[in-house]
Length: 437
Ligand SMILES: [Fe+2]
Image 1: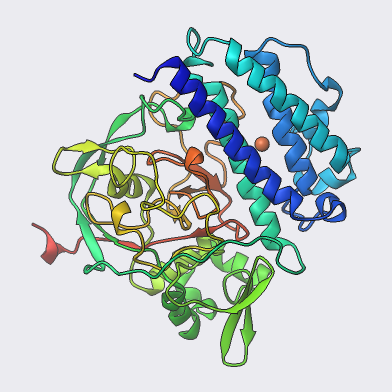
Image 2: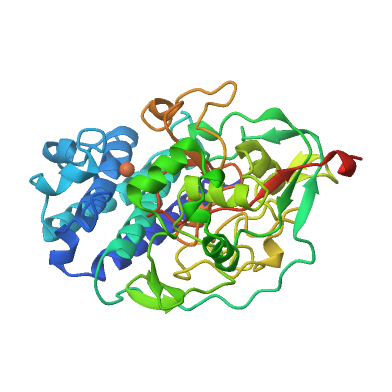
């Protein structure tokens, strides 16, 4: 049991870490860049920042703290459901200077609320849930802002050391045995409504790759004419491929016989050992079919990540129950790229699968559905309104995901055509009759 003081310190630390990151992402560009829309898919960075502050005000200052509103008049401008991303630049938004003043004022009040409110007595505040939700919200927008940085044109403004070299595991794939496992969680304090509750889920035996698909693997698909061969694509995927004229992952460009890519303003040769990133679900599925394999389903991914056959239980993370450390996973924008395939042996799952957390979000061949016993909390718009929509699941987080915003149970979702997110994939396959035990 964590003491209240420890919990307050943990919350304060997480709040500071997320604000440091938001500051890095917004201070690194000038005002002109902050208010510009770098892509129709994204908001101006200044919108994200004010929206972060506004959500924090709504939940922590007004709701948890019971305080007077700071800027009720701007609520509608920063309500993501009222204005689509493409329309946000035309709104009478706060200026960069006003935004900074606003988020600072809100944050000061939040630290005051944190010291005074009891972190128990209602589901919203138990174990600091509302604070954890707001930390995750800020970190999620930080990852979105990082994607905006990847879309912006101009010289590099973000800098980070590269990850070290990797040692590949001996096996290419591992067998995940048939049977039930515990999916989701009822105990993780900051888990969001869509991860709840824990339940028993049967999964047939299957094989899953120990590492994600690399750029080198993916180049073989391109070189084999995979983008021009309808056989590998679903009907929907083929239509999208033709409409968008896809020939390679987003941000790749032909360079003589080979390819280069742009990464946060830097043009570089394709690193063949790195997990492929910036591919849509449709491209991932086409690659898998070409390779005689398939994408894992969401329950398969979670079982490969969490199931420990020795204890028969599900872990919080692939490596166990400890919070993520730098030895486990490439998280938190520590590096501005995925680490080579085979990295982080200390982060391996009980079944021997690596890099499930961090590096790249992994497309899974499942739609977004409620778990049995789901209850919307604290508001329907967090998850419920998205159930059953045109989405595919993304699991595990990327190099741009903070440790506060990913868990073995964490569920992300997006449209199957999205490519600006830090998404890649790994392959799985069925067990063949002569492999059955
Ligand atoms: Fe948001």
